[in-house]
Every structure is written in structure tokens, then in C-alpha cells.
Image 1 (spheres, rainbow, N blue to C red):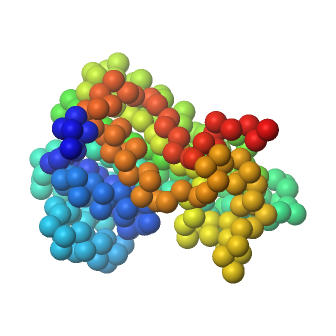
Image 2: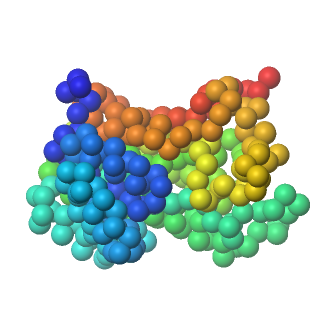
Length: 271
């Protein structure tokens, strides 16, 4: 492997590490030689994940923390620096849409459950901002580090039924650009902040919307396929390389960027 793409021995904090996307990234990073710190709200789930990773010979550490609680994150940061001495990478993976914030096809914005709106925007915006505030501070103190956030195709253009999620992911894109500029100007060029924008991947949160019980495409999925030149959904593992690239020295002059991993969805007008 070309060393410029290496993340070997880097200490990588991954929020939402017990989820599908976070877990995939954690395993990929461990295979690449990184020291992975799995963050989540369930110590039991985290311990099970870490046990599986360390059985493969990886260096992983589970820390229970709530991305919505600054004090919880600060306590986690202390544990991590006591164990490893530094924090090199932060992957803000915790987030996603929630059923209470999803409109049915026959509902309008004015039928929105505003408690659901508050929950989904708080989770996705502050669930990224708070870890960046805590772990980014550690990076600023040591003078280097890389943060990668998760945006969405919903940040590019309107996607029906998910107003709160869309607004939150658009905010993540803007926050990524803002924080990238701020830390570069005030702490130097060794601290970078970027984001990836996944296209359509089938996971637990959207399976019922994208697939019928028999596995066939829903009407919504057919619209997605019509605007995806590659004519398929993404596999979660297809995000790993893009994220690792952004965390490596190969991306040393890239900050404030939004990298789509979407099979061409964002590039195609559909006509």
C-alpha cells in the first residue's frame, strides 16, 4: 500500500460505532492499522463490537458516551487521551433519520410532528457539533487531526418526506466548511475538516421505505434509480475508502470539502 494513504497507528474516535456504517468503518480502519475508539450509548453493544475486532488482532477500545452530552464526551476524551496520549481522527457517524420526523406520502409539512423535527435536527446537528467541539479541542492542542462528518444527498436538493433530516444535513455541510476554515486559520494547516455525502444505501432506518416486503423496489426506490447513473444502491463498505482517504496524508491539502459517494446521483439531472 502507498504510505501516503496510510492511517496506521492513528487514534480514530468513531461515534455511532455499534451501528452498521460506524461498524463498517471501524473494521476497515482496524484492518488498516488504526487504533479505533468506539463511542456509543450502550457499553454492552460496544464491548461486543470491540471483542469481535480485537479477536481479529485489532487495537480497539470501547467508551460509553452520549454525543448529545458535552460532559459525557469530555469524560470520554479524558479516558482516550489517558490510554493513547492523543486523538488523531474523529468520524462523526452517529445520526440518521427517525420515523417521527418522516412524513407519509399523503402528508404535508403542516402535518409534521415538531417533536420529531426537534429530535432529528438535534441528533444530526448537535450530535456532530458536540463531538467536534470536544475532540477537536484535543486536536487543536496537539496541532494536528482530521474530522470527517456525514452529510447526505438531501443536502444537495430537496428530497420529499424528510424535511428535518434534510435541513440538518445541509447544516452539517455548512458547519463542515465553517469549522474547516476556523481551525485552519487559527491552529494551522495540520487540522482538517471534511464531509462525505452518501447516496442511497439500504440500512435499518430506510429499508421499509426503499424495499417492499418481497425485496422489490418501492415507488420511491424507482425514482432514486432513475436519478442514479450506476443504477444500483451503494454497499456500506463503499464508503470506507473515501473516508480513509480524507483522513490520510493523501488529502493533506483538502479541507472544507464535501465528497459525494453516490453512484452519480448528485451529478445527474435525470434528463
